[in-house]
Amino acid sequence: MSGIAENLIMFREELPEGVTLVAVSKTKPVEDIIEAYNAGQRVFGENRAQELMEKHEHVPDDVLWHMVGHLQRNKVKYIAEFVHMIESVDSLRLLRAVNKEAKKAGRVINCLLQFHIAKEETKFGFSPEEVDDIMQSKVLNELENVNIRGVMGMATFTDDMDKVRGEFKFLKSVFENLKSKYFMNKSDFSEISMGMSGDYKVALEEGSTMVRVGTNIFGARYCKTDN
Image 1 (cartoon, helix red, strand yellow):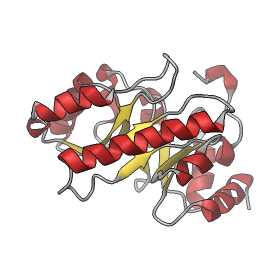
Image 2: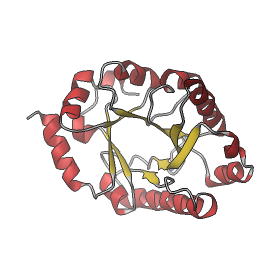
Image 3: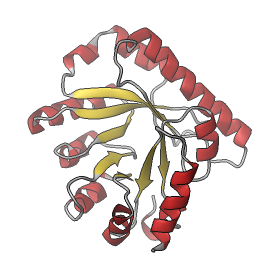
């Protein structure tokens, strides 16, 4: 059994029932993805559209690809025909671009709304007020080729788990507020994607339904292309 397979088995034992594991294969070769696939993993995440497109061509068709990194509008076209979920929708303009390319591809693309929950300027994401404005404007009614499934957030990169916990609590409250105000009758608005290799345990305690984990499965990333 490969190290990747062993890591997956150990990691799955920690996950509560109903939590989705997104194996983030950023910078990793296709061979590593195939090892994880052969160990039963089907959901994989990538940070860059170009890398996602290239890897998609070399893995089985039943892999469910998640785009988890910042996505430029002009790159949506590269992944619109196959991506299962875009977790990093951080602007209305991007949401409209996804809708446009999904319509061209004859698909409806699952999306998560990314919120800026960290005390770091380098992170992307909506504020709750911005999403309230979007929802109240009814603009989502025009976007028939996107399916909003929930929220995503990235905590501050820090060893202070109390700080991280507070940020995850905030994202959970954002989700609950959106659910009660705008998505009460939408059963598949149910995802809270939060937690990565360094903080997933705290995220699970705070209600995460989807964790994005790379290092704990594949090992350290290749630094020369890690950006």
